[in-house]
Length: 240
Image 1: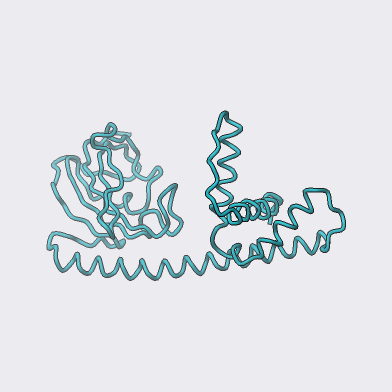
Image 2: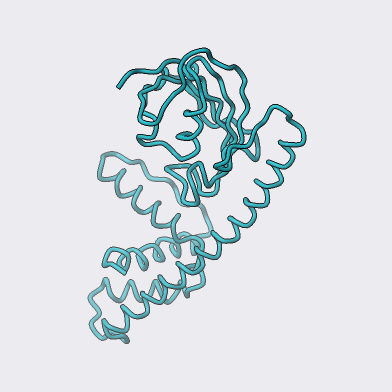
């Protein structure tokens, strides 16, 4: 555990306890400058991170007393620095174990949902094909241009959807110009393989399991274990 984590843990507990001990909803302060904004963001992030998991099994009242005693300059601590570090290491170990268990449960659930989705897709859509790498695709329009290659610069538009719900996620159409990009730099594994199936002028619909999309860790605001549908229109290929 690093020093930053050992500082954040009691600080977050103080914030959470202060909120839980007040029956009324506190008034949101006006953020007047950058320091105010950074301070609020820091506190909110800490509290959000520690509202769940192993941390909420600790004694909040005792955490508050410990923080108040330490911040007021108390020197007769009941634990040595070595004992404090050992306890904090145990907390982080238990927290990590809980996170791994949660991830394993999520993976098991999503794996089953993906399998059921792909089985239904193959039964109901005769136009869908399975790629050897493990994703599925459908040709909506076959282009007449040359086929894209790895490390080639391309121009394309796309729409994306959350596969298990069909909810639209993102698109270029009507939002920004077609994307200019090199196949594979950087790009998640499914799209790298998918583009190399396409001729210029094609429109394909790809069904990517999370393993070939953003993986078990996700990316940015995309949570881990999220399978995606991408509809991709490949416009043009460029010589390197």
